[in-house]
Length: 409
Image 1: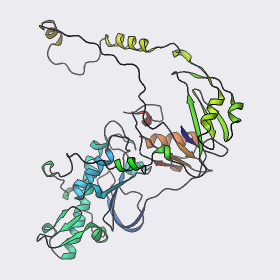
Image 2 (image 1 turned 45 degrees about the horizontal axis):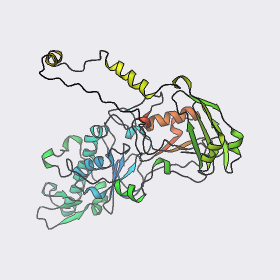
Image 3 (image 1 turned 120 degrees about the vertical axis):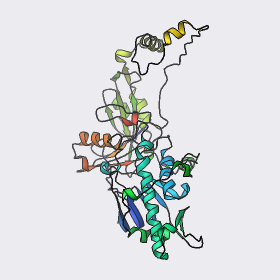
Image 4 (image 1 turned 180 degrees about the horizontal axis):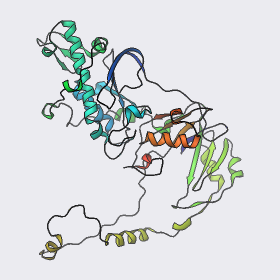
């Protein structure tokens, strides 16, 4: 089931401007380039990856999307390791659509894919933590009028060499925010032998929200006035709707619209009763060119293709000679049926398009492609597109399709 909209078009809903509000504290604006800046106090921090409030709570604005692979926890560990805070003290929120700040440096776009979330942000997030730690240590040292080299950070505190004086990070953030940013060349990251978190089996930060229901997925988005669209897609690849009883669907109470595409039919209603509208529509399908393709046909095709010469990725030794001279040779063929590689959360998107803007609520691997697609459909400039990204209930690449229809891993 997919969230849709009300109004004169299928994709219209309330537009809300999103921003990050900081109630005071240390904000580490970590652009992926060689430099970053620090700001403090109330106001906006749209470029921030990391911020620490006066309670000592660390917030990481996640540059990548969580879809079950555990990066909320893994990326938080990168930051917490160098910042010297407990993992439980790190909270996360989704990065807004802002490619200049949040683009994946290995992919060149604001997207999650190709198993790059840790490789791409291994150094940037650790550096953010290290710089924040250095500034907090200097803040305490300045207050105590001692050499910063005689102080250390540990578990969210700065402690002097005697161990008798310590200040919580939350008590130091305003002072730290007024200090100069340490140049990149002066920041030394931890040696792996000194890691406390990295390499350990940590409890996932997203598990409690999944258990108690507080963690919201894209399909949970329901702004005021939301309409629901139930969608039926051709059960056969390449198929299309042959006949649809629109009048019967529209006769169902609460159903407002029936929308047909080349391969699907959607019924828009006030509530999930749209599913009844789909039933009433009595859709008949033209299965198209793959109407008679069976699982055995697919297995046979794969078998034929496997017997053809393939590309050689690596050649070492003489496999053919080794097999020919082997004292015993065992051949086995394993087959599995053609199964749906489906995510647990159905594909969904909630959209509102007022006069001069477009806002989406969606769980996507590829914010850049979503922006481009929304701009193409609405005719709006890309800067008019606002995307509220959510945790994703499984991806498998299908939520990473780019504007040209090309999948990402």
